Image 1 (cartoon, rainbow, N blue to C red):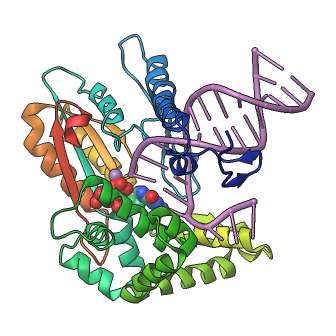
Image 2: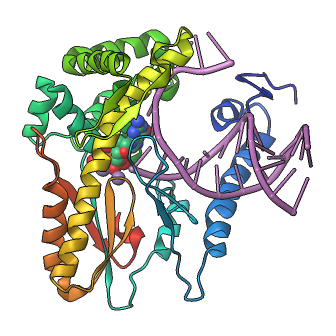
Image 3: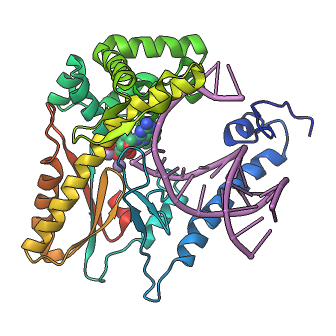
Length: 334
DNA sequence: GAGAACGGCCAC
DNA sequence: AAACGTGGCCGTTCTC
Ligand SMILES: Nc1nc2c(ncn2[C@H]2C[C@H](O)[C@@H](COP(=O)(O)OP(=O)(O)OP(=O)(O)O)O2)c(=O)[nH]1
Ligand SMILES: [Mn+2]
Ligand SMILES: [Mn+2]
């Protein structure tokens, strides 16, 4: 179509979302392709997949895989319920199909606040980050305010989600190039932002360096519970391969510790539901979130119990909190 | 027809 | 060529 070629990939030129967005005004077909892509994704990956896995009782029973990920997270499949749309207003509607086991029950969910940043604060000991969490601060929100020049309390969901990408991106080794693309700013501006981040949180930089050194010396890194990830390419002479290994090494103790914590919580919640003879059920796990089919008469106990049992296994030098929601379905809990 | 590689895109 | 990490599932293309 005589449109400018952009990102080169193995098979030719990329037509991904980022590329097409930049061509949106250069040819009338482009917005149509984008809309088609989005609708096709929704139909084939969610509607068709979920319909295909319905049991004769019209239920879905995903498999939680305990031996797939390199960090200790669970994964889910058949269907995957850990990637159900939430960011787009239209696609998010699909969450309305996740309802309680019985008509008279409700959905209850609890999600850890800023979980991996809290673990990072603990593992790195960064003074500023520890202080912020001790004071009840929200680093995602603070980043969103800085990036989008927003006053107190004027952050949208999209903006906070974008700030998460930036915060986790930087702490897990994002380059100025990567940040520049994510924020649609110049390379030098991105480099400045990263510099300021590490000036504010110098302990995070030190943690990155320590973790890389440990991976090189030991050949593995560990979570707080002692789970190891072996890092094989950490001494590669190929810079691309070596740096990839370094970023994986930095990430694994943190993502893995978050998994350690929620797993301990799940075991204790399961035992407590049993012990108290409760009929509410733990039905979904989405990495740092638990979803329950909740019996109304058990609501008060369940809220208190889940909150307590999720927070207790996180034995960190900063507070760990969960935020909860409830409603007739998963959509309403958000 | 099965399976792998790829690009793409949904979530955390 | 690649420059946050961890996943699963899709359609296309290619091979056997
Ligand atoms: N490396 C990386 N990790 C991510 C990303 N998004 C989410 N995660 C990880 C780190 C988060 O702490 C964890 C849980 O995701 P959430 O969406 O619940 O975010 P978080 O708990 O940080 O903030 P919250 O207070 O719940 O909104 O998953 C990402 O874009 N990159
Ligand atoms: Mn969370
Ligand atoms: Mn979450």
